[in-house]
Image (cartoon, rainbow, N blue to C red; front, side, top):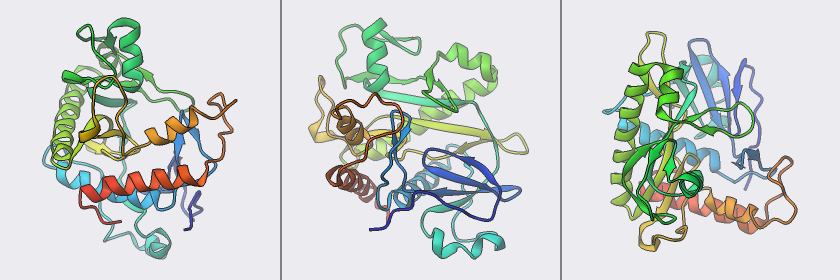
Length: 292
């Protein structure tokens, strides 16, 4: 199986992320999802076959089933600008044209369960991003209700969890209030649809941007296995990390690599890990009826 780790198209580069190469088409953007994968803010030297296509298809599904909650930047894959048509075969399944926006400089994280950096914060002080939680919770416990825990977006290095009050200082109260409301609504929709398919949406992140007219749009990706933590519902039990259909399989492997300090360069991945990640991503897509 071939792997696409980089792209080189005759358009101005707008931004190159850990996974996506974004090109400037003028009023719109061309987003190409490569097969790169990252963990601990490091890009792995090995890609995951079909990963870009899986992420693109899953994000398109979620944009469609949440557009009644909030408009998004997705403009489809059927009608591309003429200058992009020549590359349709090369980009099939892994590229989308989206509306250009001014991204908000905050990631909107919603947690329904206690895991990851939220678990570490809770252990240290009984709260996550300034949100106090009941005493005595265990790893992977379901929270009394989903909580909104924003983070600043770092160009390099790790994102930093912040309080909602700090988010208000960055964005202003009206926008901060609105994206918190939307993020919680999107999480509830995602959690409901996931539960119907035997999986738990433990946490996820959303990104928003303002278009040229000042309208707030959901951007980047939504509820993919790269941006979310999905657990198998029938294997969930507080006190341990349940088996997941996301990047946790990769993180767990990297924690066992002797001598790696979570700084570049990242180690090469064995075939069993590459195949394991791909299988989990395909499993997740299949549960939502997403064709890759």
